[in-house]
Amino acid sequence: MVELSGLDFFVESDKRIYWLYMVSALMLAVVIFRNQPDILRKQFSKEVLWHPSARLDYVYFVAVSAVKVLLIVPLLVGADDVIVWMVVFLQEQFGYVERIRIASVWLVGSYTLLIFVANDLTRYWLHRWMHTVPLLWRFHRVHHSAQVLNPLTFYRVHPVENVLFGLRYALTAGSVTALYIYFFGAGISMMQMGGANLFVFVFSLIGANLRHSHIPLRYPAKVERWILSPYQHQLHHSVHYGFKNYGSALSVWDRWFGTLVAGKTRKLRFGLLDETPTHSLLGAFLNPLNKGIKL
Image (cartoon, helix red, strand yellow):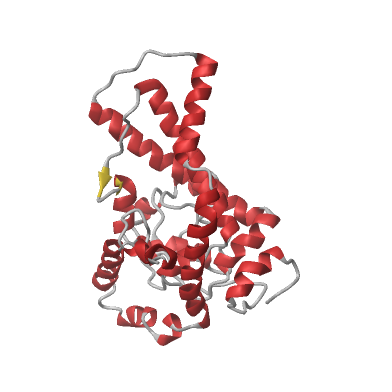
């Protein structure tokens, strides 16, 4: 029942809404915006937390958690499957190679970093395609139909998109791990903090949950050239900048591929420019499958 309801997400450090990440986001918001109480007050107001869009987020989170446990995860190809296929493929194509021996700290450190960077790069491109390929946008618009933001908006993702991102992760993590096993041998491990990739853990602590909020936390300009701030992701959710800031943690991909935007903090309007969502649970699941039908 805990997994079906999604409550386990609050106690697992590899999940965005892990309790420690939520607490750190709140502490950052309180410290940085202590002299701007209106900003904090708005986020915790009925206008935001009990908006029809937010209420859909809460119900959708539970519903999609059950769908993932019962339907998606059992059918999804996992990273372990990709590792086996890739290692066998490499051995068949290139034969056995003598194990490369390097210091453990360099092996573990490089593997941890490469997994993080490769995962972030493939997330950027799939996210960008979700916006630019019309068929994929039909599913991704469910996420962008949110008119107010809260941490659970992160999980307002259509099951079809969940499958695509799950396959993306399996292929990315599986391929990187297979290469390390092929060249360096089995028993590869990551640098972890609390059970999560060290870089994911640090990123999650510096306000990741504020990305889906009305709290415009920005990083120094030089930092935002490398790491996306919560405010930069809020720009992406706005009706006028949805084609910018596709990155997950790193902004370097947006900078290199011409989709980065920052600028001064401004009032943003969230949601879809071309329609007013009905905030229906059934509609969120079925509308992308029924073009032209709105529930």
